Length: 461
Ligand code: ARG
Image 1: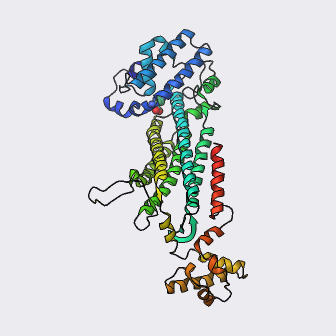
Image 2: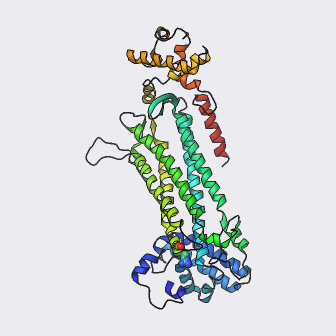
């Protein structure tokens, strides 16, 4: 079919190997809806501008509508030897409606056609991913609200640092996903310009109206420069980068879930729906789901680097190298959508083991900074001196096999006589957590403020 409609200068049948290398139909058939939508808009505009007749337009419109049905019902299989989805659909249209079908490609090239189809795909999936991000943020906020008093050791260097609450920890991830959402949406706006009508590279002598196709397809406006437009794959790179960053966040959360599920922690229990067994060890329950989310981050990063590398040396305008733009994007989009769906379900279903988290807070002298802060605030000591005195209190606690929050007033005063009565209460872990009242801090009241602020933001999306 492709030979017949687009190889005026080629007399011999293509070698099978050329076809295997050249044909993109096996993967770009994913774009059939976008291709038909684009062709319908293009045909409408050609008719409105008097470039094709009303009669031809109606045949094209009817034929494309039928082809959509044929593809969706499996009658038209898209497994022939057409070079790509554009040729396959145009060929089928011509089979159905004859000469009218041959007029569809007037004032159009596959270069602007593929730029349009692929951009529509990226725009639609950008919205789909953004919606899933909102669902994940909503779930994280819910878990956060339920756990604003669930205390756990906050860590730096994976060492116990200061007491925080689990809600606060979840709100950190909600904040990352909010930035991801905003990144997807700003890419959507930046790329919401219509490529169709750019033709091969230089525009067309036909009296087309690009505003009409742009409006019909829901873009903000036509793109400015045709040479740029047929060479541009920034929109594809943006979705790949946005997915990589989002998956990097998901991977960090997954890593924590894996760690927290380990026997040494047991801070969370993933539901049996999201755990897998071992083929040999009957007792095992493995966190394969977060491990896969973490692993799939590597693959989406690979897709980003692959396309950056494809694009980096290309002269203007279209080069066939650019056909390599699609599989990585399809793969990253599919991966992102499935991963976000699984993550949301897993977070919603996990059990938070508050007692285990709270018990872990008695390891590591989490409230030590509070003693130093007391000496600064109440006794006027320079912070560095307060820091050293506190170090001595930690050493004493270690000698006694206690946590700093378990030292008596006498113990503390033996370290420094300026330590007054109220200090024992200050060193309680929960008091320490709730003392962190500064804006964006972990105190329960501040955490709930963050929850409210995020809910307000969610209600406006
Ligand atoms: N299948 C091609 C692609 O995905 C479509 C554009 C082909 N254009 C051309 N002039 N060969 O990039």
